[in-house]
Image 1 (cartoon, helix red, strand yellow):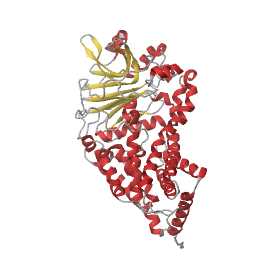
Image 2 (cartoon, helix red, strand yellow):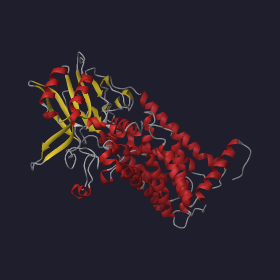
Image 3 (cartoon, helix red, strand yellow):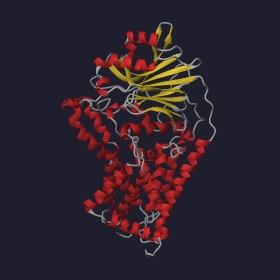
Image 4 (cartoon, one colour):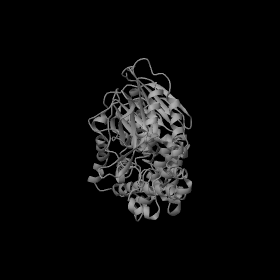
Amino acid sequence: MSKDGSPAARLAYMLDHIAERIRAATGWRRALIAFLAGLAAALALAPIYMLPLMAVGFSVLILLVDGAYGAIRPMRGAFAAGWFFGFGYFLASIYWMAFSFFVQADQFAWMSPFAMLGMPAFLAFFPGLSCFAAVKFWRSGWPRIFIFAAIWTLFEYARGHVLTGLPWNLVGQALAGSAIGAQTAAWYGAYGLSLATVLLAAAPAAELGARRTPTAVMSGLAAMLVGAGVLFAVGALRLSLPEPDQDGENFLRIVQPNIPQREKIDPNMWARNFTRQLELSKGAAPAKGRLFIIWPENGAPLLSEATTALQVLSQELPENSVLLAGAIRRADDRDGVERYYNSIAIVSETPAGRRVIAHYDKHHLVPFGEYLPFYDWLRVIGLAQLTPYGDAGFSPGDGPAVLNAGGPSFAPLICYEVIFPGAIYPNNNRPEWLLTVTNDAWFGDTSGPRQHLDMARLRSIEAGLPMARSANTGISAVIDAKGRILGRVRLYQEGRLEAALPPPLPRTLYDRVGDWIFLAFAIGFLVPAVRTSPPPMARP
């Protein structure tokens, strides 16, 4: 590429020169560049939201795969680049998982280094395999950008489903910090949003490192800026469309007690914790309509057995109110074996006073956190689940559900269940709002609780439904059907949030067809690559 005196040409020359150096990197330098690129991409997620770094990270990864394609062992080199990128990405974005092992430090602290390094190392196999597969169909110029985006997001989809799934920090989640950027998830879901995000983030590398003209080199950057502008303009347009009026008959009182985790799991503190939440729940209900009082996950352990607590609730809670409380439920199974369930209890007025009239049991449990896989084997070496209920932890419920507490129907979700796109309520049984109770106190004042909130916002956008979210230490929030936060109680603050229940939107396209639109786009990007042989690419 010739170098002339214009600023644009000088910038293009500099970028192209850097790209050639990245493509040519080998050995530990190549691994370090991939690792740092993953770290940079992770900074686009909550709470930093430095979106340009997503483009830096993925553009560098494209160049590293270019270098692998021109090497003697392209698939091995591509896998290594993807794995080191993924290790940096997940190390920077899920480091907070290690904090949970210090709540009961005497028992579990020794496991924290293994979790902090082991989980990113395992999750990095998905980016590694995506690069491994992509290089098989590699092309020069723009085609490889579409190939890479499709294969990357297909492996994200696999990550959300393999071994019970962990779709935490999908790339598209970077746009959930602002409702404007995430609105298109109502059409193609979080995986489709990831496809669009990766496509835009990798675009600047389309013509880099090939000694093209300055105009060609800059075309990728221009395409990214134009595409991002369109994405945000469409989001702004959707947010401006008319919305249904509130019915004025249903209200929320969301409680955030801010109870430290060691106190929350200590049975000697349960009575005090109950009183703390009750004090935040008191106060007259609206003159008309129904009030839903919401307590966080595990807010009332064994509530259905606590007759004294139910009597107190009968006396202290306002009339025309329903308590939706995170609870622990104990019951015998068909074989007479005592089981524990992570539940939501519906406590309503009856002629005999307040009673638990229905419950929902969490069905998507956290491995090693709420139950111990291969329990009979692992207990021999002294492993145990973090949650101290039952020898083997919690038992799973029957699956997603829609409940009614004397008002609009709702889908209950407990903590981790809100991270799964398209799996928040039964098919063809759409509720009128979403309820999430959670307890992120395990993870401290880190990026974890903030990332968790972003995933909740995406579920509201995908479903077109409002959400009430009660979190023990935060972030509690009321989220409207377009993912906007209408009110919140900030992290590590005690308080409560009062609001009218926002109205639902008409059924979204994503709610109707699920992930099929995303899958059609991803496969469509790959068909031309599969049908033709890749041309040779010059070695760096």
